[in-house]
Image 1: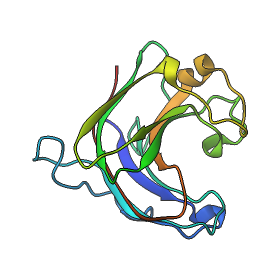
Image 2: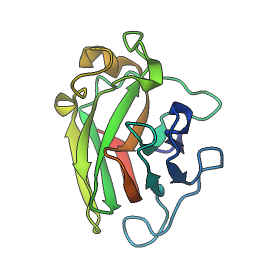
Image 3: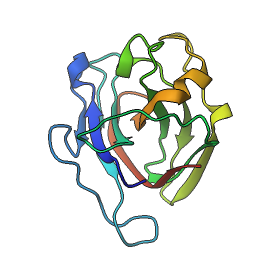
Image 4: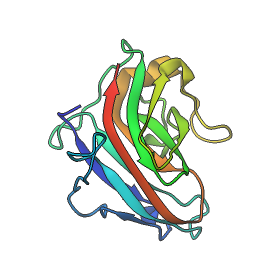
Amino acid sequence: MKDGFWYTYDDNQAGGDSGVTPAPDKPFTMSTPGLLGSGECPRMTGTVTAKFPFGFIGMGYYLSPKEVKKSFDISGMHGLRFWHKGDGKKYRVKLVSTHPDFKEKDSDNHFGNDFRTTDEWGQTEIFYANLFQQPGWGSKVELKKALTAVKEIRFVTLSQPLETVDLRIDRLELF
């Protein structure tokens, strides 16, 4: 994917004090090396505190350029795949949808799936049929509807507190 842009986010607007690098208010910078030992890839590092009860940090990829920020109907595709390398922790990948059934907009319970990293590059492939909303919170939305208005793909921590976070993503694609 090449038309969009990467960014980071944290729990500070929700009352937390977790920290992520690159900082959310700074331009996103890629890291080296990427998957094949050369090139660049998106990477986030940081810490997650428990000041906000559900503390988190994350990074995401908008599917369109910064000036546009539009949504896409990806329901004709089958899933997403990406390579990852990290600190051995579990993360969640989410497809953020602008479908109006998501009442809490970006903060709602968007469809995703969990994956665990290792210190070696590994590939994760997730068919849409294996995406789910986390139990117990947020708007209940049909997957079919959510896929008609996807604007971004997010990667987020799943637990707190975390003294260190280190996640690299490469070759992110919809298939």
